[in-house]
Image (cartoon, rainbow, N blue to C red; front, side, top):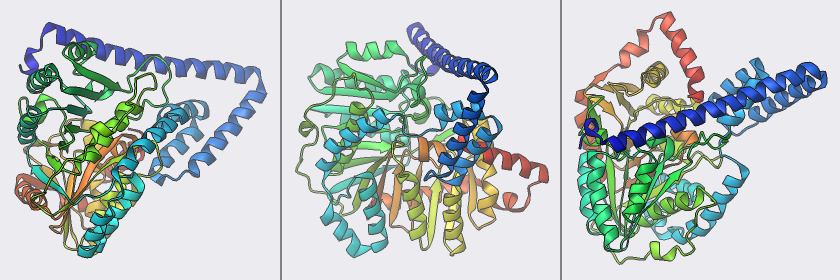
Amino acid sequence: MSSEKKTVEQTYSVGNGVKRAVFAALSIILQVLVIWVLFNGLREKYPLIQFLQSVLAFALILGIFNQNRTAAMKMPWLVIIMAFPVFGTFMYILLGLDGGTNSMRRRYEEIDKKLLPRLGKGEKALAALAEQDEGLAGESHYIRDFSGYPIYHNTDVVFYDDAAKGLEAQLEELRKAEKFIFMEYHAIEDTESFSRIFEVLKMKAAEGVEVRLFYDYVGSMGYIGNRFIKKMEENGIRCRVFNPMNMVLNFFVNNRDHRKITVIDGKVGFTGGYNLADEYFHVTEPFGHWLDTGLRLEGDAVRSLTVTFLENWNGIRPDDQDDQAFAKYLPHVPYEAKEKGFIQPFADSPLDTEHVGENVYMNILRNAKRYAYFITPYLIITDEMRNAFALAAKSGVDVRLITPGIPDKKLIYSVTRSYYAGLAENGVRIYEYTPGFCHAKQCVADDNAAVCGTINLDFRSLYHHFENGAFFTGYEAVADMKKQFDEIFPQCREVTELYRSGRTPGLKLVQLLLRFAAPLL
């Protein structure tokens, strides 16, 4: 069933979902405006309120200035609050705060205290990696200490250079499930591709396999609605939604679940850039050829994917029934890996001040000696990351970035291009993928280190969203990723020289304004 052949029920359900989201967004905006109007009225009536408002705005400005955040994230909010104190304050509280409410942070902290210690520290694997490469061991040490996820030595890894290949492998493994299936995705579209998955999930649930499906409300709202949940539940599939929009002010609304994870029986796991929608698997191609990638893991490291899933499943809503016993989902399955590489699946969260995804990428650049290749659908980065790219290139490393040739969001595409010049001027080579849209989020360096997952090179992924990725070395999968890059470059248009010297003064001004506003998008 193609996206053009949705049933009337599906169209009705999706339409209602979008309407609810729009209505919720308008309700929130209305609440902000009402508060603003009331506050302005009180301010005119009581001069003391105007003084207190100025004091509060100044205190907020000082608080933002003192935050442990990059200057690019702070500066737009400082300007807006200084220019429009009342409106800017309310908008910052609604959209600028990371980490949600204190109660939400505490809830996730409690869940992580129960889950992460079950993974251990991976000391033996880390020591073995340090004997081979101290630089990569430093990367692994950072990930473990600041995300809680260890490195593993007893896991096999397969890299899929096309999401369609990942889907076929995923369906094959889902059919083998005996105990449980966990699936967590940012976007699900209930059409042809997912219908193939659904038939397997329905069959497995009927056989007594525990099946759970978890998706992000905003990521999926254009595709599915409440009837989708009912359909899943009627077929024995437990379904939860990450952070639904409602008509009440929600200080967590800016933080979305961007993770993509499948776990089967704690033995096999999948992750990567692709969601469960037709465009990812070439059933439909609204933006030319869609380039996306993924990983298959088998062995000990699957435990980390399981923990990442259980964190959000149990953490998102206090009124849901939590798991009381995690052991049955984290079995120690005997396995002998065919390859002796190292892999470290990890998760990143906006609920703390540690930006793990960004730092993992920057450490790849710092450790690179010969080359470092990146591909991302969006390029909206901090000064710190731009400097990391530039310093690597200035140090003689062949640094290359691939971005889409056909955009899925024209405004974001313009913002992406606004970052080209600052990189090109410092020796970074910029390529645009001419066949279509590249949605993969990955990098490879020096034939010995790679990262693949859900983390875009943009503020949303690096600062606002729940993300996951995998750092790995010593596998054939690293060479497979490098081979894919080598095959992609000839399909791209290199625009390095154009952006190094070919911009008009007017274009420079427009791109400067776009970069200034980028952290707010």
